Image 1 (cartoon, rainbow, N blue to C red):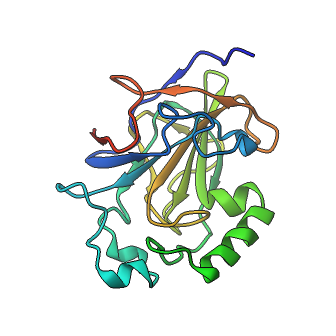
Image 2 (image 1 turned 180 degrees about the horizontal axis):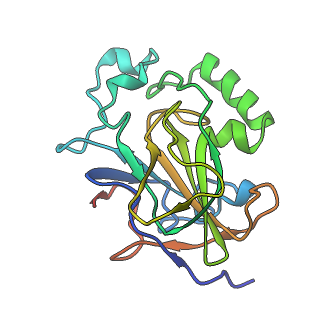
Length: 205
């Protein structure tokens, strides 16, 4: 079946962010079509040198506090104007894991998968615009500043970048859907100004 036309989004942040898991490189972008993630994209906030945090040998073996990363707490903004349909901010930010697979993290990842959307998305906001639903995920604990039923304008701050849900380091997951409930929705392609960026690109908005 031919995919729907892409929904045009503004970048939901300012400053430099590294593109990961882009649908410009493969679909499904995250290796699964579950929870309407086929065309989802990830953005990791970085510094002027394109790094999310300094890395040492210890980073490969030990978890790191999310506060160590330059983008933890960076503002996340609405990529469209619309109506907030969901807003959840009560999940804690866990440690980051950038190195070799961790038995401890693998165990918590399995638990989050069993919990479904909330366990994977963590703190999130879903905005309805033009009959489509845009999800912004992995926000910082306690940072969600909007509520369901609220009208928001494109560029308005809705939360802060965090490390909640299924996230190995602070980043922002963005996806579009044709329904508010990711358990029942189908994925919708997305587009950004200048086109859909590829993996490894650093975009600055």
